[in-house]
Image (cartoon, rainbow, N blue to C red; front, top):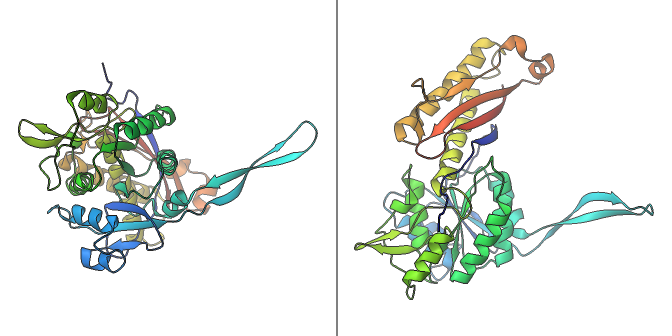
Length: 364
């Protein structure tokens, strides 16, 4: 069976600069659970005040912090079973009757909506959620093009169900897919090990992650089972010549995990750079000097990601092609509203996608 592993078209993103803030710094991972206790935690002792050692949340977080390189906080997001009903599209029938659709938003979506820009790279789930809730979360995050969702599945059948849904929904050619299925038995926390390692070691190719504390092949899997997981673009731990490694590093639809993550990392870094620039230039003059200053800041951010190995250089040797408007070509309305639109950034993700184009909207 031939499986295409490269994304076949360029990727286009629109960035609206804003500032994510958290209490203890930037959490790189998020664990979703059911309940009422949400927060950002810096260690297992503070987490234990809300989630004791018997809970899956505690065990998952402990498995992340077990990775020596992971020294960041972890965000715990507790979701309820409540659903929110909001009026949808209004349809007028031929008989003149008016019907308003009822849009139903599950608690898992309500819980995460206001935390898309907290700095989190990977979203993990405990076992409290139904397959339907997981699928709705996958759809929502894909629509937002935010956060890499790593779903732990317990059986091949569960993996097949999730993959079928993701492959059917995540089909837009100009964006990347963001959900992966990790086949692992209950009580094993290799998925959390892997997410902690990947979040704290950028750039990371997931298929090269191995030999972490909870890593071990899932009992009972046959060679044929591994082939099924591979064909579904899923992940599980396998023994590769004596090393416990991940089978592969793919999302369930049409790209690698690290492709989606690296695109978001670069976009977020540019957002944060713009916000820091704004903080250091209180109500700057709206002129070509200010616009060029923003351009140079963006190039500096991209230079740093070339040095990290996340970005490749352009053909001319630069880290990014940044196009900004001239002050004379900005409408008076945008000047009055302090809006700088249509700042275009073209970058190349290393070894992944030929070209990414970011479109920025900035408030000066």
